[in-house]
View 1 (cartoon, helix red, strand yellow):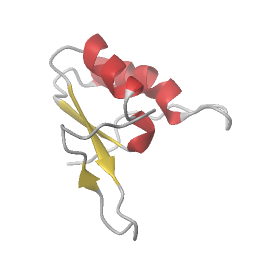
View 2: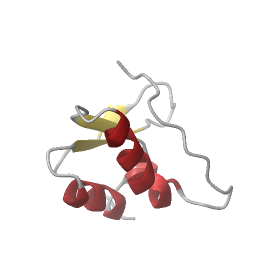
View 3: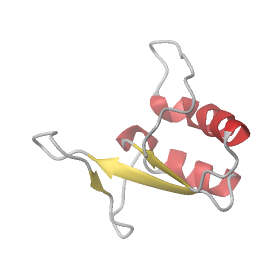
Length: 83
């Protein structure tokens, strides 16, 4: 449904990928039945692999924004994303 479950405030200089583990852990502690997380490109590559490895059974899907930024699309599994 896309409802906001967790808010964590980070320093302005922190990257999204650095806070991903904390957000996911807090979300799963609050709602352990979460099965899928949709993340933006800040969680691509190493961040996604780390979240997948640390949270068995949780699916992390990275969404890409098109050039016009009007609609998000899913990253295909075969695409290579470089951090």
